Image 1 (cartoon, rainbow, N blue to C red):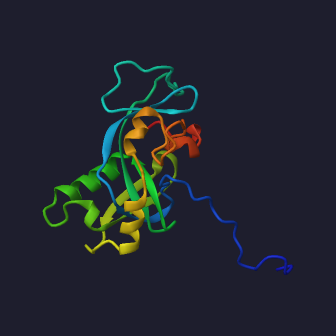
Image 2: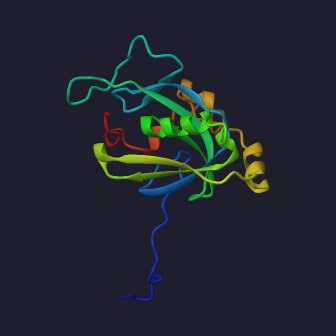
Length: 187
């Protein structure tokens, strides 16, 4: 029953971050940049540490309940998120997503994912989360999205330095700062 104060179907808006967070169901993105790749682990200050090469030494690593620290391979690239209608950095560590995208890149009929939208479907929870990757028909990127990206100054390489790729060179915020470290399972 509505009191008339707010519309009956009103929902609080979700915050739009600079980083893609895959929601349950279909998530459609348009890849706009080439990927940077590297390795990622969390420190005890709940900050991700990234490097181009596998780290020889982990500095202050977060230890999981089994007494181990986890280093993951990652890809990061700029996307246009169809749901939020914004440019974002998409960082992936999930092997099934990487395998799906790499299969498309290696396929001569699909190739470079900057030429089509990709739909990533997420289902399940925690360690039972699954992902599937499906390409959408090839089409030119819209002029609006192309202009938005060309006018942006996103520097993915800043992630290796723990800086903000959206231009604040003195920032120490990183892709996962918007997500609690405890929410990222060791898998």
